[in-house]
Image (cartoon, rainbow, N blue to C red; front, top):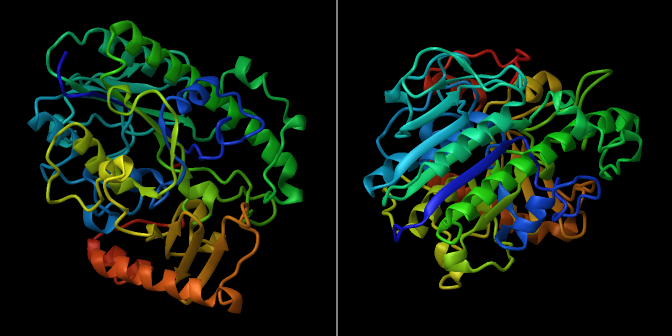
Length: 453
């Protein structure tokens, strides 16, 4: 066996942190993830800094914030600067593989992606973006002919990942990224036998779901939870494969998501419009599950890491755990000294931001650009007019009491404002209007379109 650990990085699309049994959801059946949480580092405050698909994925692969890599909206193309996470792993002798949803190419959602736009991933079973889970296509290797997963695509992608793992006989370590489309809507397309596990009328809703949206929320949650249960079985299959191969102890297994899903919490809309699903600064949108198991280094005991970790921090942390150098282009921080207790965190919280609202978070739907900070306890957010939100998440779990500009929290708000200002200065973010930002980057996009994303 190679002395360096292998990486299996599994991530869902639009799965909020609250939607697991181990996190306290009374509805969802997630037996594998619940068991995995008992063997892992559990990052209880993992934050999607810009909670929407493309910006997250770009930050994951580069360790950079959106204004640096430039992808602060969906359907943009990630430039190749030679320092992606896959390229860095390759430098240190790793084999690299990517299976599933990509959403970083910006040349159409069903187009073939040539090797020069794959950011260093060699093994390749990928589609740019689709949420047609039962008729999902992909491209394999350098073949330009569309293939189909057949059946529910997360199951097909898991089978491909199992085949990849079973074929690993090299002395070189590997880094496998497995990117699922669910539980992103459409919710109703989850496997029927798994939907049958959830009676909408018996589902317990979060306290911040508006009463007039309760029935609609329950209908969505039936499929949402069924998708999650499907993914739970996929993780179980991957874990069993690692065990059978005898590489479980020397493999870093991660499960997380790119961002969350509001599912009618803090409902914003009008009439029969659907509610906002992501991009907004509430916890259902920004917080994601994050489990990291590395038995050889951390054992098989659960440990909660409450210090907030952001998307750009993932790349340097994984590289450091594997003994690889962290490129100077990375803006995130390496969490390994924090995990080991060697060093206190360098900051009190992580940045949350919406740079250019679009789709269901577009301006006409009530969306707005913002910058904010999420600490273990507080959420503070500014929009272009000034302070907008302040929540004490210890006392107000469901974020129903906005404390911004309240005298009792004046000192807290001042400290958070100063921390946020320092973050923005360090990142060179002037917090300009979206139109100016779009012009500066040369993007021509229509944020009023209600496009699927």
